Length: 284
Image (cartoon, rainbow, N blue to C red):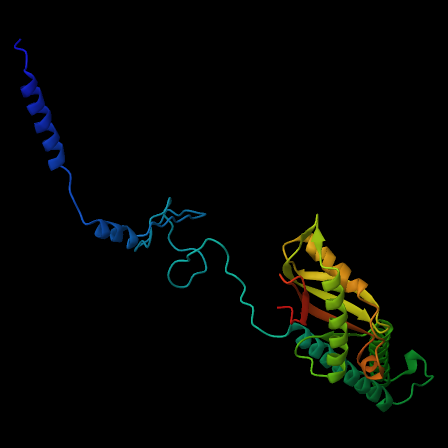
């Protein structure tokens, strides 16, 4: 076998390299990137399958699925259930108005029942066997109205025995509550700024929303975090600050006529300037 010279070997390698390069296709880099940008990769997961194939498939998935789901048109973009749509509004004020409306209807019903009972003829001492059908019907009606009256009066007495709460929010327009909250806010902010939350010598910053229940004598009865700061220590310190800032002033006569307790939804902001700022919130 004839031995190849160095020149012949080099020539053969060069021809092979050029042949490989001729198979490579050069394209515009930006155009190549645009092709991927305009063709996003979708991963479709289905939680069931069907033997029936869709007439017009809208995506490629790991199993055929024709129909199903609650989507009326198009394809859902997420396998998660739809998020509840929360309409803006003042929940505490709406709740207060509903309670007052129900109480008013309850009072009207009491008047109607008492009027209906008064309109019935007085009961007689006739034995049940001797009573006419009309007398028996009136007696049954009187019994039903009396039972209903007793039930409603029992409920009213139970409601009156419980402390009446007044929910205070940004929509509350009564000046007497605005003045009281301003005093309460100032005391809490002063307490929180003077005793700014910290742990292991490090300041705790963040925002949270809390409800505070204040009794007529100014005592803080309860605090509850309804929107956390994400820092458990800060949430606990905020509740401690709110409770220790009291007692606040006693309710005046106008406030007592509106309720025995007030419930405040307040936003707390422990700012970077090491100060506490609070304001009323709707709680939404």
